[in-house]
Amino acid sequence: MAKDEKGMTDSELHRKLLALWKRGQSDLCEIQCSSIHGSGVYAARDIAADELIIEYVGEFIDKEQSSKRSTLQLERSAKNGDAAVFIFNINSKWDLDGNVPWNTARLINHSCSPNCEAQSRGKKIFIHALRKIKQGEELTYDYGFDVDCYEEHPCLCRRDGCVGYIVSRDQWHILDDKLGRGKTSEKAS
Ligand SMILES: C[S@@+](CC[C@H](N)C(=O)[O-])C[C@H]1O[C@@H](n2cnc3c(N)ncnc32)[C@H](O)[C@@H]1O
Ligand SMILES: [Zn+2]
Image (cartoon, rainbow, N blue to C red; front, side):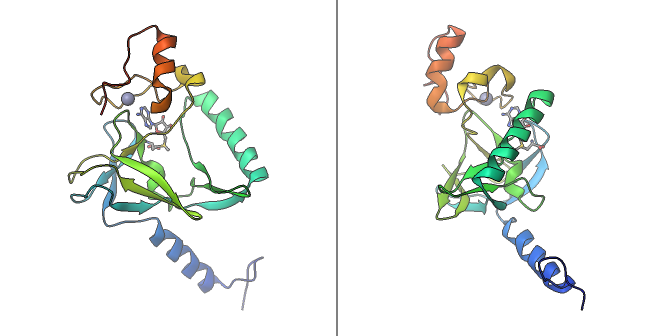
């Protein structure tokens, strides 16, 4: 029987890919065209506050691989304005690269008034609801971007109190100073 370089037969590989694919899906959400950007992920039914919505799946990579891929992502981002976050820190040895086609959660957009949050549990990452979410609402979370490169990432979330850039909420006060404007930090909820 033919085996690949890791010693797997075709049917073993097929079963593994199917299991990976299933882990990246959830009955609670679905991919749709987004009003924020490109594709987004929407609630397929009403979701309760704190409910676990979907696992953020991907490939475990070591820190060396991670730093190489992050550099490539940054170069790509500088060229085409992409603000993609796919690599999550897991522990001192491993990161998770979510840039794989079976990871539905990779399509969740950023918003200044997010209804979700990414939480780690051991070596896994899950997307949880921060509040009640109505069926048909777009799921969003705070990408947590550093304020230093704010100009490269304009925010199109159009939520009340949108600060205009994809910047971590923790750093909105610095953004306010840089833009010489009054506090936006309390406007979005
Ligand atoms: C991880 S992807 C999210 C899925 C993306 N909408 C797509 O169709 O591929 C990140 C990309 O979405 C865009 N994006 C996400 N949130 C955004 C926002 N609030 N405003 C503008 N662009 C956003 C960024 O440009 C970034 O390139
Ligand atoms: Zn915004």
